[in-house]
Length: 211
Image 1 (spheres, one colour):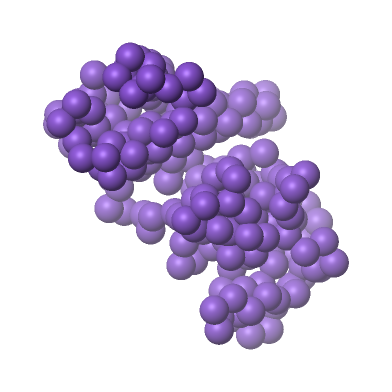
Image 2: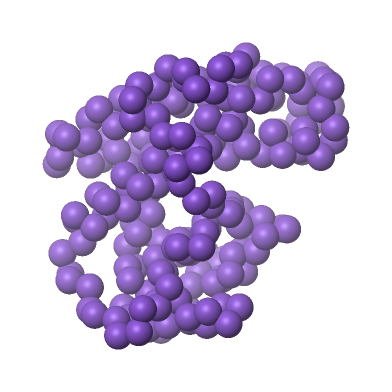
């Protein structure tokens, strides 16, 4: 079901060690988005260096903000640096305010590419954690809940990353190897999710796939 040796996952040299990147928090009931307070989905993500706040139908970042404007969150100022960030270009990106904030150029294609590549690297770390889940039957309820959440998150984010990269590759062939790695990761996480869904249905009696 999963790989016991977490240092030899078959995704090539581009597979990034989870220790190399600062972990992302995801919006949930227990961890609302610090910008829009989203709790019903994991569309928003953040760590100590960046916040990606998704523009959705029920929750969105403040629409009056302009590039360079700041929000104060827990006593720390965060500057808006992009309105077209994330995999799909539908998230506001905030970074710690450095004082004087320069206007971001309108041409964001290179910036978007860089953001996507960084997010995919973080995604690989999430994939690694999900593939390291070895057993459902003997896990405690809390560990089981976390494990199933990891698998679901990795699967949904792999699908989103694959779609985004498919749209970008025709414009930048250099992204094709990254797309192939994401497709490989999606296949592996897909098998893991099938096992998780089977466990949910036959051992937890669930129908909607949620723990």
